[in-house]
Image (cartoon, rainbow, N blue to C red):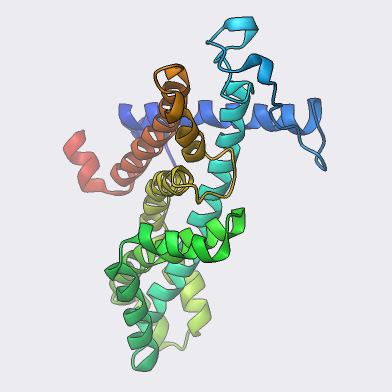
Length: 283
């Protein structure tokens, strides 16, 4: 069980930051889907060229407006929902694929193992951003195209960690005993291996969320994102008016940086929590 008292100060700060972002995201969803729109037609920031590049707090707008006259707070809020949606979809998909492939390469031999190892190494050989750019260029700009591109480049990292952990677990005495009494392959995977490796995979998942957000923003900045509300796409637009309206770049950058810092603090803290030796050193 998790114990809040066992977490260090950095972890508590990280969870607090993520809590604020979660409240922000839930509040925006309620505003967009209930107050100003509906589940069938969610509210989106409205363009008003008469309010182009308003400064923060001008005309009652907390963060001002962008080059299209849209409330910058609303635009960033839409980007937050989009980034979190992409990050969780990609990371959970990579986790599922990576754990499955890692277990197969640890348990099997022959063609299956050789094929999966070769596929994993081939993806690692090439820079992931180049692979993602190539896939997005072929599939076009869409949410699911972006998710597919990031999953293709992301699952090998999970697979390598899962393989190492699976090899460790499969070598334990109680696992050898379970195999000796005839425990089935699927039951061994679900009942023994998954619970044993999940703490390590959870750490990698939390840290991986920040990486997905950065990758999605990079593709959006290059014009290959899946939404105009991608923080990368917003930064790409804002750089053209950097001297005239620096608040655009500052607001978007600080919002993205805060979320990534919170995720990294939580990931590092979970590593300390699940590693008794690390807790002992910090205690």
